[in-house]
Length: 150
Figure (spheres, rainbow, N blue to C red):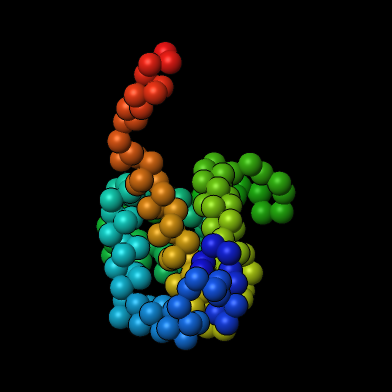
């Protein structure tokens, strides 16, 4: 749902009725199951300890990060109205590029900010599960036919 971005009423035919799918989506978000799954996967993917942020987000971000035991390093511009290559800016751009692969997160399709937050969480859940699956993929063993040909 988060990847292809179809509307609820236009789900593929092999899905249950759209009200059932939306009901699960709504209950999981309301109960906090989506956030719980996202946080568990984030903990398994990598222990993030340092966050780079633009200086414009210095206010509440620092307090929020401190509550999560994260250290925030603010990236500040030296010249206010001039182009300047800023350190670690590519990390932020890369993350936005990953999220932009999921159609529902590209534009503001959702009516409520909580719905958009859930779609971003689902996109990140997909990214993290793929990363974990790649990391824990068992070694390939050759099939008997390929072993004989070699």
